[in-house]
Image (cartoon, rainbow, N blue to C red; front, side):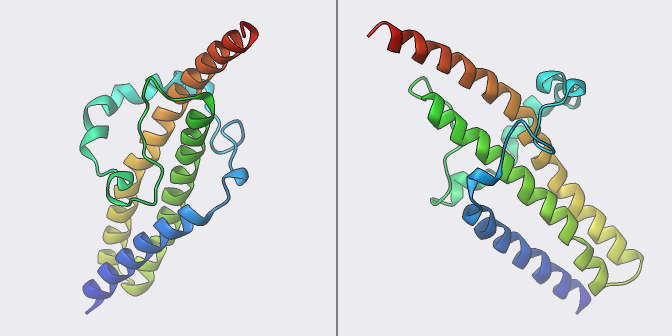
Length: 160
């Protein structure tokens, strides 16, 4: 019964996290401020390449492909600086949601207060960490791309 309760709890917070994430005002998120800022030690995202993120990040589920109400996580030549800024904000929101899920994982332990609860809580947290790393890896790349687009847009506007 505790296993079923733990699974149901994890499913419920996972589903609610999606809707909460979609409802959060994007103005609350700034890629230049803690905890979303790109830190020097991350080396522009290259630090995550040491753990093979380029290989495994595309193998994990992307909710934007399943949930049509989400902003698609695609970069294309037709992107504008505004559309890339929206993607950057989405990485902040996704990171926030996965941090929240890690925090709420304590509920699994509260359901099952023994070593099994600890193991299930740790597994749930471990399952969210790769998604946090993906956001931290993608954000500096998106910021650089947006900055290039801004320069291009500025040149094009000055030439008009």
